[in-house]
Length: 218
Image 1 (cartoon, helix red, strand yellow):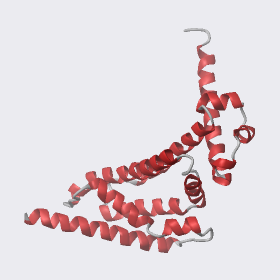
Image 2 (image 1 turned 120 degrees about the horizontal axis):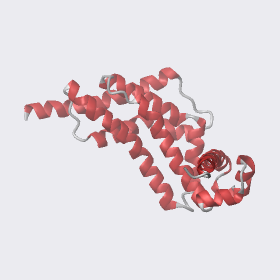
Image 3 (image 1 turned 180 degrees about the vertical axis):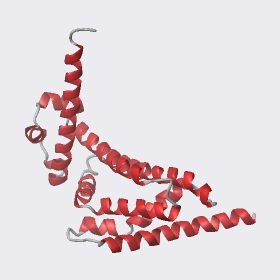
Image 4 (image 1 turned 45 degrees about the horizontal axis):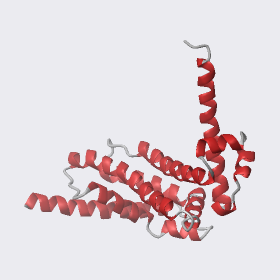
């Protein structure tokens, strides 16, 4: 084994830690100030490390911003994966997923992130459009995989699992996400969240049930 192997591994670990620190700090600073008003030197001062390291990992401020968008989308999807439990019946499973998602969507940090990417849409229209496309699609794919596995066990047929998942999240978000973004003091109680998601689940399953009945009669 080369003598410098442990050093290389340690260096790699430090690089991962430093990248994480840059991303965490950048996410906070971008959301607080908006892309236009952020200087990468501010991020380096808060995160530690050096400007050269930041540039070597992300290229420039734009590269760092794009990495933050990807990081946020990945976090939302990763947080939803453990909640999509195929051992739960569709009604209970979708209820659990919907409540978890809506709470995250209404959280202050999520609203700040959405405001930030909307503010940056003029400067990075393609990147923002891609983020808004990839994020919901990635989350919806988790639910579509859940319904594909669970629906046959309950003799339920969805015409299109991916479209049903996207429709489900649109129903779950409803007006609440937009109001939370526009109104800083907008809040829903746990019971209000539960009732709202229950209605969304009912609509989605009623549509699936009609399709199932149609398939059987055909």
